[in-house]
Length: 196
Image (cartoon, rainbow, N blue to C red; front, side, top):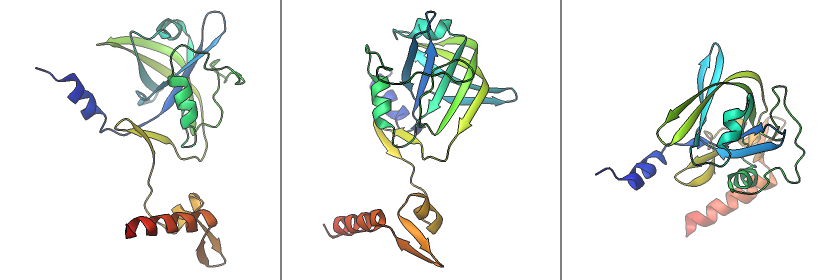
């Protein structure tokens, strides 16, 4: 017998990014949801895909949308991910819902954003798979939010002076590299853990 719970746990070993996918309904209202089923498909033409449960109440919005956008969340956007993962509430309440060039609502502060023209939809088991052609994108230098084994996480870069500077844990003073206040605090915490 196929163990669905064990299958889900096995899938959880794959580290994914966390995205919010947005679109507007026929009346122009903004909709969005958190998804980690995002993947690149093609560079020429530029195409991406994501999937949504056939049981989702927002499925009709995305099926009818001519355009949608995938926002790759930055490491400091866990609250935004949680907000758009909750069912049944206005996810855009209190947010400014301006549109990107493709016509889908923008989520500010993301690591990357892909504005897409809806191209194809396929059914795959209990999910709809949406394939879109990227017509606009942007990227900023921000660490992505990741998801693994049912928990959020961050990318752990190889330890180097450059990466410590990038993380704000060290700064270069002349030719020397020295810890910032955050770096010193982290070092103290790690030393305390090592002694216990």
